[in-house]
Length: 476
Ligand SMILES: [Zn+2]
Image 1 (spheres, rainbow, N blue to C red):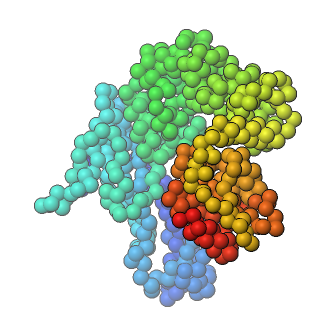
Image 2 (spheres, rainbow, N blue to C red):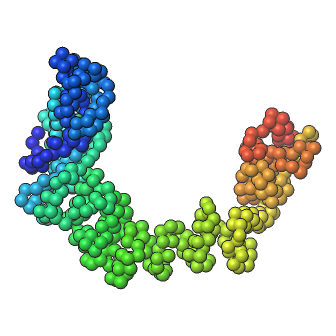
Image 3 (tube, rainbow, N blue to C red):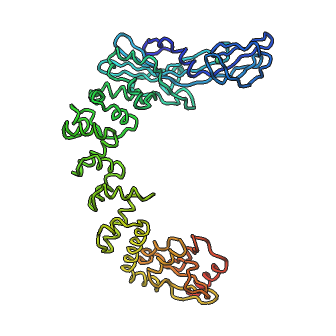
């Protein structure tokens, strides 16, 4: 197939491909008494007759890999592996890249490589020209064509119905230094991040060609800011069109840039600084670290409570405690009108204090809804059942909180539903033990049974269900 650009594979590419990606097979011919590693040429003639088809053997030739024995008398028709590779070359000072699908064929005595070009890229001074193999071949000729497009990779399924592993050939990257792409230092780049995914390499080069800011950032020691952005596609944190470092990094001045470089210097921290600036909060190491850790909303909230670092240190000491729980706790204290002191802000046992405060708030809210709650209960639940079991309406919202606690289910969250008249709640008790929670019932305003729940949301016994049915029928 004709490719748009006539460019040659880098020298040594075949050897590199075989070295890195070819599997090792030891071909055995028992008639001739030969056994040779197809990948590295090591011979095992001396044990040819002992080797068995499909046996594994550690090849100790240069390939040094686990080789699989294949007897020549068996066909090796379908023995092949495939992957995709992006490689670079240059003509004078112009860099070219080609993206190939490579099939490694083991059917012959020697490994054969078959390259199919899927895309080509020309990195000119002013623009990148890309040609990608058209996924939809022409109906008449069934010949694939290369279409000009923005620099991107072809769709994974353009040739196959399955995805293939992708790699970048990195042994001749220094050639790019002699081209117009000389500032896109892919060699240095790899040291900071795993950029050799072909898709990322193409994107990285394109950013470089388009924006002088990339080079400015790299020269100033912000390589990982660039690569992080390409890897994670993180929005508008960087102004690629910026003319100088403060503009590019969206910082106020060089002093701030220097501070960032010396104190933080990673992408999430840059985002944290932007958040602090937007909220007109102080930029220092502790605050940046905190914003990164807890998010700007929570950070702003805790700055209104006390010194954020002090709070953060306290939270860090308590295992499994989240900032959000601390904020809940603080909000509960305020609602309850508890005086804010050192002891209430930093209780010795946070979990206990937290549970007490949030329950206090629940009770407070339930009291506010008491009137509506009672109205609904009285309207829907008109009768009390009294036989071997007792079934009665919940008298107060607070009873739901108590019931929840004793049966470890969530009826406490139904106070609002009842107050709004959506449903009513009744308690099933054993006559012998009328104060002890047993089962909880929810019924609709039309007295349809919605649910019966016991300890840890367990389902009712047949006796309980029968009693509830009788009770509902008695109210008809
Ligand atoms: Zn070998």
